[in-house]
Image (cartoon, rainbow, N blue to C red; front, side, top):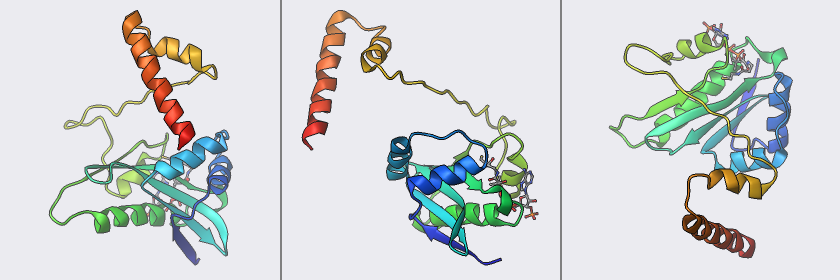
Length: 177
Ligand SMILES: CC(C)(COP(=O)(O)OP(=O)(O)OC[C@H]1O[C@@H](n2cnc3c(N)ncnc32)[C@H](O)[C@@H]1OP(=O)(O)O)[C@@H](O)C(=O)NCCC(=O)NCCS
């Protein structure tokens, strides 16, 4: 099967549709757009011009790289496309890193997918050498003021007004740029 892998063309709408095909709930398109903008590198796999898979790299682009959102649509799974996408991401790290350095590639495996990543040379955590990988989800309330309250919970009144002024200035600078 001829698969074409495109670099950095993946759109938020394509991301949403590939992700949803694997049973994930939709995300706000604005959140996806921002994530793609701030990511380091992304690929889109196509068959006959149809998007069939994707993968992304996030991180600092130097010491730490993380593979995110590696998905292949169900009809195309089990045909080597996931592996091709992962290899493409890793090749990008190899060719953009300075010679002679060591760099770390991490990821969070979905349930039951660790075997796929082990075949690509990844080590599951925890192990004798590494502690557990850890994760925390933050639900940001729609009401910004309430969110600020939680954020400022442990601060004195003076610290809060200082911080609030700082945030207002950042917000205003954002509106002007
Ligand atoms: C995980 C996923 C990306 C793998 O992509 P894929 O195209 O189906 O996998 P490939 O056909 O490229 O498989 C490559 C190799 O890994 C093996 N493999 C695939 N899935 C595996 C699994 N769950 N456990 C163990 N091995 C697996 C294949 O047998 C193949 O082995 P081979 O090279 O010896 O032939 C894909 O199944 C997927 O998108 N799943 C749903 C979304 C998801 O969970 N993504 C992962 C988020 S962390």
